[in-house]
Length: 325
Image 1 (cartoon, rainbow, N blue to C red):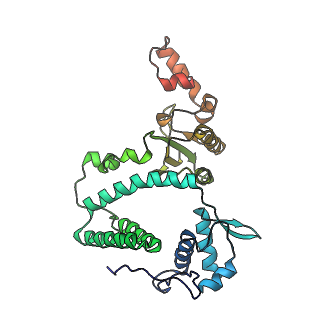
Image 2 (image 1 turned 135 degrees about the vertical axis):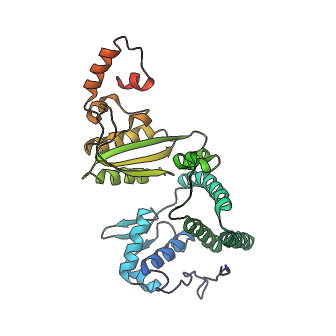
């Protein structure tokens, strides 16, 4: 692995300039523009509230306007910049409270990732991880924030690339197959002491924009989901309270903590209802009772069967009591 070195990124007069990057043949221009701009923002070469333009950045970095525009769009999706039509681009301000929440979660995630990497890596990958560890020590000793950031990015890239695309010709343990997260010790601690809420929804084919709307809503509310599952459903079964329908289901895990979570989930329900979808009752603990007949139109059939088979209401549950099932 190439030795990690700290580079002087100061231009004459003491001002900082972006470090040199690999040629376009080794990295697409858009990726190169994104990497340079991200580093300029993180290292405060582009400070919060700074106003920039595609033309200025293109001239400064020597990259065409189209790659710059695409990189800025990606940075906007990650909320590092704000694009104001016909006014320019503004570097986002730092929300200290949000950053502290992210650091609290990241601390647990990186501990689990490091443990898993050490357990699964090949001998060659372990040598690379050792080189990166030395890079972290050097960056910390030299108080070189830029080098530390680049080393951290290299670590994440190595961890991502070491993941196998597929496993063939091997016998899988049933527990590991059905419960893959259990391979990571204490994985639940990633959500903090208060745990998490799993929100699962399904929308019919043709209403996929509802999925995007829900994801954007979570992003705008600074509610990161550390585990998300998207699946394609086929035909529903005959059950009166069956959750599946031909369409797409999305499940997201949201850490408990914010007092306005119920309001946000209610807004997500409204999006799902507008799309003709429903939430998964097996994982529900907060859906409003008035929404249930709209999500599950065969509720009256279910209630009739229940009255006939259990007229005294002996068999019940918290879910049934809350939703009037």
